Image 1 (cartoon, rainbow, N blue to C red):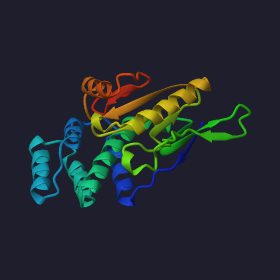
Image 2 (image 1 turned 180 degrees about the horizontal axis):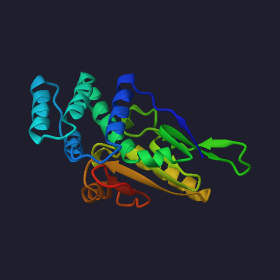
Image 3 (image 1 turned 180 degrees about the vertical axis):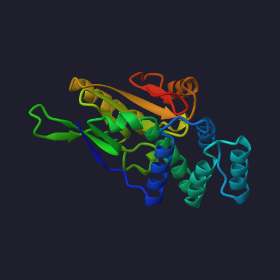
Image 4 (image 1 turned 135 degrees about the vertical axis):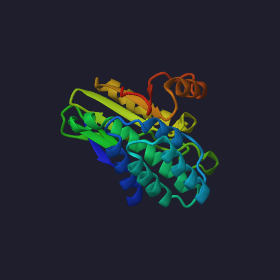
Length: 231
Protein backbone atom coordinates (compact mmCIF):
# COMPACT_ATOMS: atom_id res chain seq x y z
CA UNK A 1 0.00 0.00 0.00
CA UNK A 2 1.27 3.44 -0.97
CA UNK A 3 0.22 6.89 0.26
CA UNK A 4 0.86 9.96 -1.84
CA UNK A 5 0.39 13.43 -0.38
CA UNK A 6 -2.22 15.24 -2.45
CA UNK A 7 -4.14 17.87 -0.46
CA UNK A 8 -2.60 21.34 -0.78
CA UNK A 9 -2.79 23.68 2.21
CA UNK A 10 -1.44 27.09 3.07
CA UNK A 11 1.91 26.80 4.87
CA UNK A 12 0.46 28.49 7.96
CA UNK A 13 -2.35 25.91 8.10
CA UNK A 14 0.13 23.05 7.76
CA UNK A 15 2.32 24.54 10.50
CA UNK A 16 -0.73 24.94 12.76
CA UNK A 17 -1.80 21.33 12.22
CA UNK A 18 1.67 20.00 13.01
CA UNK A 19 1.92 22.17 16.14
CA UNK A 20 -1.39 20.80 17.45
CA UNK A 21 -0.38 17.22 16.60
CA UNK A 22 2.90 17.55 18.48
CA UNK A 23 1.31 19.20 21.49
CA UNK A 24 -1.49 16.67 21.88
CA UNK A 25 0.62 13.62 21.11
CA UNK A 26 0.51 13.12 24.89
CA UNK A 27 -2.62 13.17 27.05
CA UNK A 28 -3.39 16.62 28.43
CA UNK A 29 -6.13 17.95 30.68
CA UNK A 30 -6.67 20.84 28.26
CA UNK A 31 -7.73 18.52 25.46
CA UNK A 32 -11.44 18.36 26.36
CA UNK A 33 -11.65 22.16 26.44
CA UNK A 34 -9.71 22.34 23.17
CA UNK A 35 -12.14 19.95 21.46
CA UNK A 36 -15.16 21.82 22.85
CA UNK A 37 -13.81 25.11 21.51
CA UNK A 38 -13.22 23.66 18.04
CA UNK A 39 -16.78 22.29 18.06
CA UNK A 40 -18.37 25.66 18.86
CA UNK A 41 -19.06 28.70 16.71
CA UNK A 42 -16.21 31.12 16.06
CA UNK A 43 -16.47 34.85 15.54
CA UNK A 44 -13.91 37.02 13.80
CA UNK A 45 -13.61 39.66 16.49
CA UNK A 46 -11.21 40.86 19.18
CA UNK A 47 -13.93 40.21 21.77
CA UNK A 48 -14.11 36.52 20.83
CA UNK A 49 -10.33 36.15 20.89
CA UNK A 50 -10.21 37.78 24.34
CA UNK A 51 -13.00 35.53 25.64
CA UNK A 52 -11.04 32.43 24.56
CA UNK A 53 -7.87 33.67 26.26
CA UNK A 54 -9.81 34.49 29.44
CA UNK A 55 -11.36 31.00 29.52
CA UNK A 56 -7.97 29.34 29.09
CA UNK A 57 -6.52 31.48 31.89
CA UNK A 58 -9.45 30.75 34.25
CA UNK A 59 -9.06 26.98 33.81
CA UNK A 60 -5.39 27.14 34.82
CA UNK A 61 -4.08 24.41 32.54
CA UNK A 62 -0.44 23.48 33.01
CA UNK A 63 0.02 24.03 29.27
CA UNK A 64 -1.82 27.37 29.28
CA UNK A 65 0.97 29.20 27.45
CA UNK A 66 1.19 26.61 24.67
CA UNK A 67 -2.60 26.47 24.19
CA UNK A 68 -2.76 30.26 24.01
CA UNK A 69 -0.02 30.30 21.39
CA UNK A 70 -1.90 27.68 19.33
CA UNK A 71 -5.06 29.79 19.32
CA UNK A 72 -3.12 32.97 18.56
CA UNK A 73 -1.65 31.19 15.54
CA UNK A 74 -5.10 29.92 14.59
CA UNK A 75 -6.75 33.33 14.87
CA UNK A 76 -4.02 34.91 12.75
CA UNK A 77 -5.18 32.70 9.85
CA UNK A 78 -8.85 33.72 10.17
CA UNK A 79 -9.91 36.50 7.78
CA UNK A 80 -13.37 35.29 6.68
CA UNK A 81 -15.77 32.40 7.31
CA UNK A 82 -14.07 30.19 4.74
CA UNK A 83 -10.70 30.56 6.44
CA UNK A 84 -12.34 30.01 9.86
CA UNK A 85 -13.71 26.69 8.64
CA UNK A 86 -10.26 25.69 7.31
CA UNK A 87 -8.59 26.59 10.59
CA UNK A 88 -11.09 24.66 12.71
CA UNK A 89 -10.62 21.69 10.37
CA UNK A 90 -6.84 21.97 10.71
CA UNK A 91 -7.11 21.97 14.51
CA UNK A 92 -9.27 18.84 14.38
CA UNK A 93 -6.84 17.11 12.01
CA UNK A 94 -4.00 18.07 14.32
CA UNK A 95 -5.76 16.35 17.21
CA UNK A 96 -6.28 13.25 15.06
CA UNK A 97 -2.60 13.14 14.08
CA UNK A 98 -1.56 13.60 17.69
CA UNK A 99 -3.96 10.90 18.86
CA UNK A 100 -2.37 8.38 16.47
CA UNK A 101 1.17 9.70 16.73
CA UNK A 102 2.63 6.48 18.09
CA UNK A 103 0.84 4.38 15.46
CA UNK A 104 2.17 6.69 12.74
CA UNK A 105 5.74 6.40 14.04
CA UNK A 106 5.50 2.60 14.15
CA UNK A 107 3.70 2.24 10.81
CA UNK A 108 5.16 0.82 7.64
CA UNK A 109 3.60 3.73 5.78
CA UNK A 110 1.11 6.51 6.45
CA UNK A 111 -0.56 9.35 4.61
CA UNK A 112 -1.98 12.73 5.62
CA UNK A 113 -4.31 14.34 3.08
CA UNK A 114 -3.16 11.63 0.72
CA UNK A 115 -4.18 9.35 -2.11
CA UNK A 116 -4.38 5.68 -1.21
CA UNK A 117 -2.73 3.48 -3.83
CA UNK A 118 -3.20 -0.28 -3.78
CA UNK A 119 -0.71 -2.61 -5.41
CA UNK A 120 -1.72 -4.80 -8.34
CA UNK A 121 -1.56 -8.59 -8.04
CA UNK A 122 1.98 -8.68 -9.46
CA UNK A 123 2.98 -5.79 -7.13
CA UNK A 124 4.56 -3.95 -10.06
CA UNK A 125 1.84 -1.34 -10.42
CA UNK A 126 -0.40 0.61 -8.08
CA UNK A 127 -3.79 2.14 -8.71
CA UNK A 128 -5.32 5.11 -6.91
CA UNK A 129 -8.59 4.65 -5.05
CA UNK A 130 -10.97 7.38 -6.22
CA UNK A 131 -14.66 8.17 -6.12
CA UNK A 132 -15.68 9.79 -9.39
CA UNK A 133 -18.92 11.70 -9.01
CA UNK A 134 -21.02 11.68 -12.22
CA UNK A 135 -22.17 15.23 -11.40
CA UNK A 136 -18.77 16.59 -10.44
CA UNK A 137 -18.96 19.51 -12.90
CA UNK A 138 -22.70 20.16 -12.48
CA UNK A 139 -23.11 23.65 -10.99
CA UNK A 140 -26.59 22.72 -9.81
CA UNK A 141 -25.13 19.84 -7.76
CA UNK A 142 -22.47 21.69 -5.80
CA UNK A 143 -22.62 19.17 -2.95
CA UNK A 144 -21.73 16.29 -5.25
CA UNK A 145 -18.07 16.09 -6.23
CA UNK A 146 -15.27 13.58 -6.70
CA UNK A 147 -12.94 12.58 -3.86
CA UNK A 148 -9.58 10.82 -3.85
CA UNK A 149 -7.87 11.41 -0.48
CA UNK A 150 -8.04 10.34 3.16
CA UNK A 151 -7.31 12.79 5.97
CA UNK A 152 -5.19 10.11 7.61
CA UNK A 153 -4.19 6.60 6.59
CA UNK A 154 -2.01 4.22 8.61
CA UNK A 155 -0.67 0.90 7.30
CA UNK A 156 1.41 -1.43 9.47
CA UNK A 157 2.06 -3.95 6.72
CA UNK A 158 -0.89 -6.15 7.63
CA UNK A 159 -3.70 -3.85 8.78
CA UNK A 160 -4.90 -0.44 7.70
CA UNK A 161 -6.85 2.34 9.39
CA UNK A 162 -8.27 5.18 7.33
CA UNK A 163 -9.85 8.37 8.66
CA UNK A 164 -12.03 11.21 7.45
CA UNK A 165 -11.94 14.02 10.02
CA UNK A 166 -14.69 16.62 10.49
CA UNK A 167 -15.29 19.21 13.19
CA UNK A 168 -18.98 18.21 13.34
CA UNK A 169 -20.75 15.03 12.15
CA UNK A 170 -23.24 17.12 10.16
CA UNK A 171 -20.32 18.06 7.91
CA UNK A 172 -19.96 14.47 6.71
CA UNK A 173 -21.46 14.73 3.22
CA UNK A 174 -22.24 12.35 0.41
CA UNK A 175 -18.77 12.80 -1.23
CA UNK A 176 -17.05 11.70 1.99
CA UNK A 177 -19.42 8.75 2.41
CA UNK A 178 -18.98 7.68 -1.21
CA UNK A 179 -15.17 7.92 -1.16
CA UNK A 180 -14.79 6.03 2.09
CA UNK A 181 -17.19 3.38 0.80
CA UNK A 182 -15.14 3.13 -2.41
CA UNK A 183 -12.01 2.67 -0.30
CA UNK A 184 -13.68 0.09 1.94
CA UNK A 185 -14.86 -1.88 -1.10
CA UNK A 186 -11.41 -1.75 -2.72
CA UNK A 187 -9.80 -3.09 0.46
CA UNK A 188 -12.31 -5.95 0.61
CA UNK A 189 -11.68 -6.89 -3.02
CA UNK A 190 -7.96 -7.08 -2.32
CA UNK A 191 -8.52 -9.01 0.93
CA UNK A 192 -6.72 -6.25 2.80
CA UNK A 193 -7.56 -6.10 6.48
CA UNK A 194 -8.56 -2.71 7.78
CA UNK A 195 -11.26 -0.30 8.90
CA UNK A 196 -12.50 3.11 7.84
CA UNK A 197 -13.48 5.76 10.37
CA UNK A 198 -15.19 9.10 10.62
CA UNK A 199 -13.61 11.21 13.38
CA UNK A 200 -15.43 14.24 14.82
CA UNK A 201 -15.37 16.47 17.91
CA UNK A 202 -18.77 15.14 19.02
CA UNK A 203 -19.19 12.15 21.30
CA UNK A 204 -19.35 8.78 19.55
CA UNK A 205 -23.04 8.45 20.48
CA UNK A 206 -24.03 11.86 19.07
CA UNK A 207 -21.96 11.39 15.92
CA UNK A 208 -23.47 7.95 15.28
CA UNK A 209 -26.98 9.30 15.71
CA UNK A 210 -26.44 12.23 13.35
CA UNK A 211 -24.56 10.35 10.62
CA UNK A 212 -26.89 7.35 10.73
CA UNK A 213 -29.86 9.69 10.44
CA UNK A 214 -28.43 11.17 7.23
CA UNK A 215 -27.22 7.85 5.81
CA UNK A 216 -29.30 5.05 7.41
CA UNK A 217 -28.40 2.64 4.61
CA UNK A 218 -24.64 2.84 5.24
CA UNK A 219 -22.94 0.66 7.85
CA UNK A 220 -19.42 0.07 6.53
CA UNK A 221 -17.66 2.60 8.79
CA UNK A 222 -16.90 3.17 12.46
CA UNK A 223 -16.92 6.43 14.40
CA UNK A 224 -14.44 7.85 16.88
CA UNK A 225 -14.50 10.99 18.98
CA UNK A 226 -11.43 13.21 19.15
CA UNK A 227 -12.09 13.46 22.90
CA UNK A 228 -11.72 9.73 23.41
CA UNK A 229 -9.00 7.09 23.26
CA UNK A 230 -7.79 5.69 19.94
CA UNK A 231 -9.56 3.00 17.92
